[in-house]
Length: 390
Image (tube, rainbow, N blue to C red; front, side, top):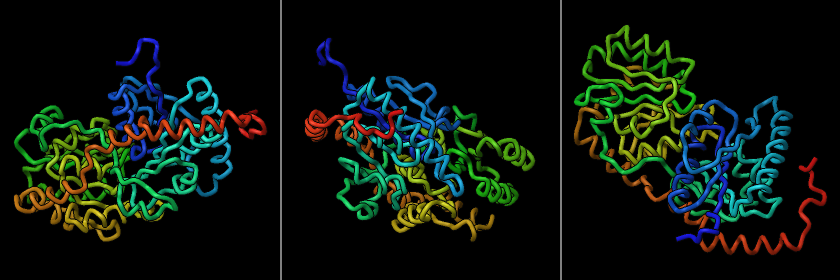
């Protein structure tokens, strides 16, 4: 037991910008809380970030002025990196963490730079098969790099530890009829989960809506749980109603544990976080990679799952409504196909990822790094020449 005067260990997780960075970061934060830590989350001001952290307990949430690096907006990106780094510096000086974990993406750049300036150990996690630009650029500043896919380890110019991608999925029955009832669906009929990521995916919405007449004709007993993205919610709901199909439609849904457990099969992008959740709950899926993802990383993520029989990959340019239904039908209706795919999904499941990463952040190796960096810090002035201090 911790002495009454002792402070719980403090770790900061920079994880905002997209659900693919945020939800794994939340999973690690919850593992840290369970191990007696007092984590803080650094997120962006995007709506998806603010919605996802509603109701979190045992951790502080800090919102940073970070924006993504987009063509024609480099000045805005650089300005916000500096602002984010300054804000992180101020926060770290008031509440100094023993380590900072960056989950990738634009929102982690400022906190990583601030942490390194203050000699705070930095750890990175990369969920995708192809590391993102932020993690590639920042990896030389990290004390340790964790990766979700084994193939990603060779893409860093340093050794990386394969942990898998953390998921927020407590132990419970797979394909739980009780979850269907909680969502307002029939407990005894198959459910197709449609998920385009935290922002939805208009192209996926379009192809699914075009497939609904065929589904009504051939598979009227199927139910649909469609996470459409806020902008498309009304249109998608109206389309199911017009076809007379049983469907629950949400623009945004943060209880993905319920959604995955209700699902018989899924249709979605190939973001690493969603795929890790899919593996954890053994949900067969049709993966439609986002064709404009950086370095086409979603295509490579999907290829990894398809190569083991864990999913079916269909590229967006090749997708037709009849192809979609033909790929889904055996996943739902053929017990042998389901068993094979679920067995393959099990090989991708890494249920200890969050606890493993949390343990490394709090463990003896982290303590050794902290002692070394603190000794260096004591020998060098911190703020002399600091370009981030106004």
